[in-house]
Image (cartoon, rainbow, N blue to C red; front, top):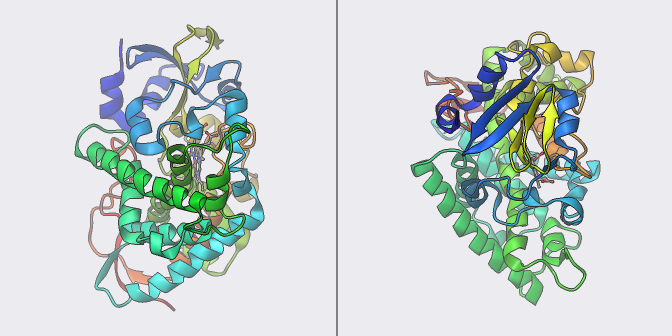
Length: 405
Ligand code: HEM
């Protein structure tokens, strides 16, 4: 039976609901008319990331490409074409660059936080989006005059917010992508023509100069898509900032250790936020041959799904998955194929997110800043609906009476 409708109504619980009836963490179903096998667990992560089993080309539905990733994005490539394009993003894994971006964003946050104290009420999700956008644009080498951080942040957030739903949110996402792809394409062309100078070694310069094949640079439109593939997900860390504020509100005891500057605890807190709170529900690839997993099969041309949200809440892996407990990552380091909010496998060779260190680095720094900030949490709707993808505290986490100590 095709389960596309129930995916739209059940959201994050869709696969976990079906997994509950499986003794072997495997589910066979149909989605968008195609046969689907869904798997979870560290062993299943290795199966999913084996390029002999699954390709990405043709796997991502057009409405997701036209909002979240962009046509021709690295997410859609396989084999050598993927590895060549991925090289563009690998410097994001370099700890020096990550620290540099975290510093840019922290400076932008500190500057913004001072202005929040003059306002009666601020919504942390929205403010974090602007701070992250401003910080990443500076760091990526975009000229200040090319960046109007507030509208750009709104568009970057809209692209993420509207990818998984029909209706007005989706239309907003499409319009946001079209607008920003056009702007970034002009910027790439200006860098190439010498009208704009991109700082040596910056993301902007690397993207503008990138060649997939030796004969010609990437067409300007695809280069713009990949530039946005750095800016957009960095702005999306605002989801995790809102979740961090939510966690500090519900479990205020964590505030003290963060405030004290306990670095190992800040890392553990960042991991637990990424594990506990929902973001990517699952990942999918197109099966290149008939695949069998724990006795269940899917033909070639079907889909293999990796149950990301379900794995991050699997009792077999986490023991007490619905308890927010950063200490679990102090007791045992995060196993990269167990904790998969940003995909599994090796980011250098497979599709795992190259921005994972960036995300953790930003969260470590911003969670400490959030813990040190003084504010009041007024009455508001802080519910996080599991039916909405991507979800967040409904109010966006509003605060009043902000004071920077
Ligand atoms: C891929 C999540 C932040 C750049 C991915 C994937 C996920 C993900 C689930 C797909 C993995 C797969 O297909 O196997 C997230 C989340 C983030 C985040 C939840 C935090 C909000 C970032 C940042 C950057 C980034 C900060 C860059 C600065 C990318 C790129 C890919 C990717 C370029 C495509 C990789 C490929 O296909 O090889 N991310 N990400 N992400 N992410 Fe992130």
